[in-house]
Image (cartoon, rainbow, N blue to C red; front, side, top):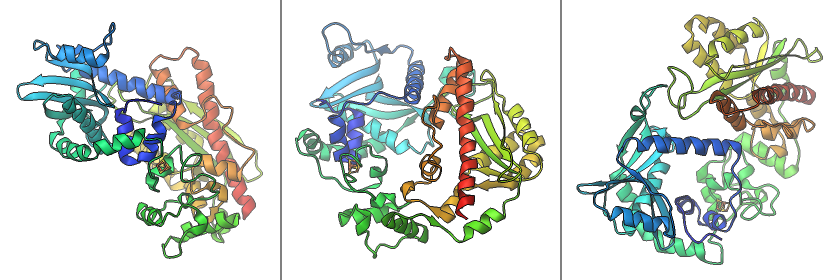
Length: 482
Ligand code: SF4
């Protein structure tokens, strides 16, 4: 079990004490390739941010001294003003400040993030910064300013790294948060180190919690209230107050939509639902049918000329097609040369491959969004792309409206829907088996970090091809349910 509380543990505990309690007692699982790539990008941005303070020094562990002792020693030297990765520990609370700068009115704590200032995670980043500021202050330093170092939207490929960042002062928000942290600190820390688990309570966080099924509220329950699709957090709060987790005890007084009620009944009766409108919906689809899937790449730093940070780039499509339900299945595909932006070529090939008639199945609104983006980027192709958009049929919407299988367990993601409706088709065994990994491997090729590019290209093609084959088989499954 860990003996110190990191920033990650603290922030987890703010959200759910029980989750942080489990986390402290568990060996962290090794990061996936995609996680590692994300971490490497974060580290690289951290290093680039250090160029904002050319005189700063990196606090490195050396000899017998702990890194916190080295930090104390270094900051006592009045001739050095900026430190990178300065480490602090107060009782069990530990942290590192990405950048710590001595200023005339006190210390400036800066936390570097690989995001823009309008990121939806900004509140989370301020909490991060507040934790670090609190620990630095507990260690006796006077912090005058707390800031986030964020990415600048105007930065383009090849620009000087100093243009990459903007420093955003968050001192007042941080002070307010710390006032709350200080009140809860002692109780929170002691609860995390007690032998008995802190109280559990149902919240939206339980949906993505790794402990839910095996160790916590979902233990031993076949269907829980979280398996109701998109159940609003206010309803979860009411269920939590009544300590109801098992779907069988879902109270009638809590109103849910028809789709949610249908899902609940299917799970409780262990039966599949197919709506009366399914047949009409499927009969209205024009053959030939196409089944389209895109892959994209997006990295923190731009990959190609004229691109900005986090720019999403279309890299790949897979397209299955057939003239009738029992017609021969055809397939074509495109995968970009990772050394350049190939979106124009990809778009032209897509327009050619899709012809002028027939439904184009997609799964979710992602393809539509990317096609619209291409129309904006290449106005001369906009008319052809707009006719493609008119032919799109979203299989996800058809499923949501007309089908429920208890094995969906509240989710219509293809990873849940496919095993329920087409159990013989699976992503198991693929070297690239999810979108996260596909993005990572393409980005690594673009950055020249892949040795066997032929193998990776084959893996990417196999993954995307399976996505569209999955749509063909789901369409078949629906035709069978008519
Ligand atoms: S399942 Fe919910 S209550 Fe239990 S640890 Fe996870 S987030 Fe906390």
